[in-house]
Amino acid sequence: MKASRVHETIPQPYRLSFLVGGLFAEESRVAARLHGELGDWAAARRALDEGNLLHARTHATAVRLARELVQRMATLSDEETAHVATAPGPDHRHLMWVAFCRRYAFVGEFAQEVLRDGFLLGAPALGAGDFERFWAAKALWHHELDAVKPSTRSKLRVNLFLAMRQAELLDDGRILSPLLSCEVASFLRARTPSDLRFFPVEDALVGSPA
Image (cartoon, helix red, strand yellow):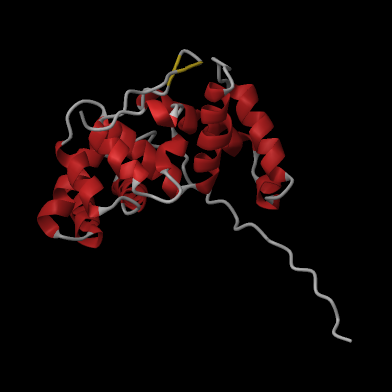
């Protein structure tokens, strides 16, 4: 008789390096234009570093910020990146929120399970307590969270909430439902599952081309 086997799904450890930078909304335009000119992210990152195009105070900070920015933007398609470079209005902020969620599973899950689900359930507010409850729930499966110092956890929370405010998804602790452009909505719906899940929106109400 064959021995039975129990297959356990072990979640991948979370990346937790999003300590600074917020959304990188304006910096993303610089990086996107470089990517268009130079053709790849490695060259764009070298240009950011060598020219201190992110205006960092020290070379070490410039290198760290450029690495973080490029790692997020590398999750965008070429079409999305080109749109970041030239997009009017808030489109580049919305796409950089998507890049943040794609790069960091913790952020993407928070966006889905706390920000969006809270909005859909009619909860208008979002605060530090929601983050702490989410952290505690995820720590049951992600034991790496238990090893994070409280000071580091606080920095992660502050930077995540800064990014939500910069993406215009949160204002004074209240959840805001963004008006996504047809172009951005098309990019998000092209993914499976749809990346509309990262936003506090009703899918059916997100605009399609007129």
